[in-house]
Amino acid sequence: MYIFQQPDVTYIDPWELTFDQRYQMLLKRDQRIAYYYTCPDNSTFRYRVFNMVEVLNNKSSQFSASWFAQNDFHRIEEVLQKIQTLVICRVQFSFYTETLLVLAKKYGVNVVYDIDDYVFDPSIATTLMQTLNQPFEEAEEADWNFWFSYTSRHGELLKRCDSLVCTNTFLAEKLSAYAGKSTEIIPNFINSFQSEISHEILMQKIQAGFKRDAQIHIGYFSGTPTHNRDFAIVSHALANILDKNPEAILRIAGYLEFPAHLKPHLDRIEFIPFQNFIALQNSIAQVEINIAPLQINDFTNCKSELKLFESSIVGTQTLASPSYTYAKAISHGQNGYLAREGEWEDTLQHIIDTIDFWPQQAERVRDENYITYHWSQQLDTITSALKLTACP
Image: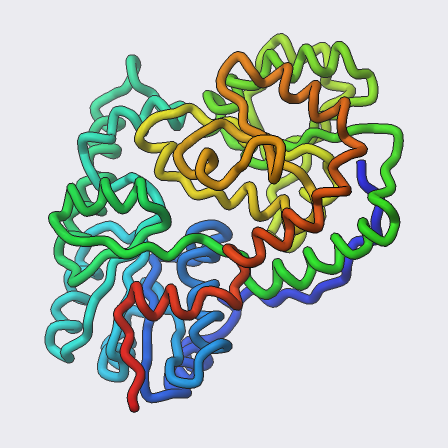
């Protein structure tokens, strides 16, 4: 495990801001963009709403932006009267969204739909159920109703919006084919808080020569039961790696249903609770190897490569399944590693055997990812995708 002093970064949950504070944030400039998300969380909201608002407010002199949610709905008309663009982010069709669309039309607001997963087409429902380890063969009527409703309601809402935005080319092609509209791309990227803490961590690691203790930690940071089938891809390889490498430790964030073949190694498996994204950067930075196993299908091919850049900016290398986005983002052996099913054990062993060579590449890999995924580089991409036009 890498040894460094964890930075003390004060992070205030953005949702602690009141409606009035967020409303005033919106009014700072004449060209205004409001984001709407059902209820803030630490995943989609952070990447597709909070990060976008941060860029627009801090890297532009023309635009201001803010975010609102269903709890603000009693005052949402005040917002729509003041904006030119509304971005609805991964929300299902409902009374609330129908009202949003009616009001947007009333006030001449352009409506953009932003989505980060292939969850809008009922034809993907059975793939979702199986990939996410949901009841399938034993599914009851309520299960079928949920998943077909879940996908259909996303799809119905996005069809009613003026334009579409998503995270990568594979997803954009699915979205355009389904909705019959062209789709723009804004990739996921790191925000200023992630950048600040990650830079400090990596500088410590570089200055200390990537000092480690006697153990090698392999981190899996998607530890929920919905990822059981993803984890199963690598679980036998991990058991063998733990057998052959007494210094190896497995670190898992969250909770998984553990396969029997890993239970003899529970004394070398660490479980850490789910964390906010600031604390998560510390945990990722401590491990030598970050793994991202994925089943390969249309749903997982639409996933973004965020686990790669979240680890690279703190000097940790990633081994991932060759989904569409990871295969495009990773040059095997240069900025990370790829492993198909059946290749995980050998690839993990190679990384362990060559672990001392990684520091020679870590800073270069971080710099390459900053060019693509740093928040300060995203303004033109966002304004172009949202078709924002600055006043002369």
